[in-house]
Length: 304
Image (cartoon, rainbow, N blue to C red; front, side, top):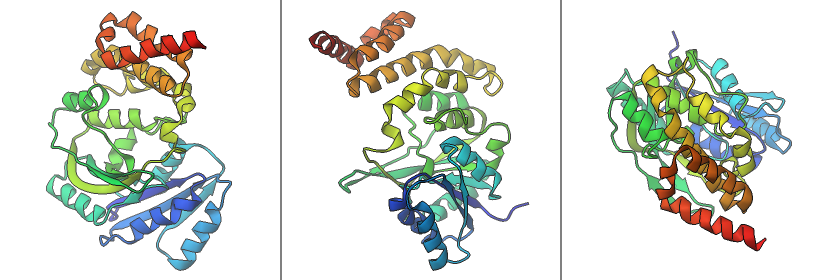
């Protein structure tokens, strides 16, 4: 039985310029019952020299693995198999752990040892350096309510670096390797539906926003499309009563893709998804924010 409480996995693909900041945010933690693994996912920049430099400066402080590019989901899954801690934290190479993050997480786990996912607050860092605290309110113990809050109501935002997940969660399901983005959505949805999850209203991570982030890649999101709905609502992984939420989530997903394409200036393409959403649920027309965008998309399409 492992004595390591936290396994922190940093997947890195072409983030050499921020990797040292991320690693030092872990090594600077006062709480030391953790292991740190960096996985270089086939980077073509200076990631490997940065890792070697850090290993020279901080010997025996972490482990590293290099592999050909396999994508974020497969890299996180490898992190699961290559570590042994009770709880896993997946920290993106452009983000940081907040001060005393591991201590705060440890206290939450000690208070509620049955919890299998601890969802921490985080600090959002804008490109200009401006920081904003993103709190986390207490949540109900009911798994259905948690599932709805996350997937349908957008009332429970979850950031990977600010979240600790018990290793038990990954025994039956891991990140879907056929997704090149949004791979965390079905993973979090699965955990919320099947395990006890709690929140921690203290900053666990600093999440950096920037224009070239995968979070903003519209075409990657489009490549997943409605497959995300199928992945989330797999009958083998969700209790039967959760399947009634499939249709409202599919409509929400259609509208989300519409909005992403609209913001990217792909007006005609965006309207295809808006019409699909209306066809499945005519009441979606009363989502006035989407309706305004659809009318503008029509106008811009005519102008072209």
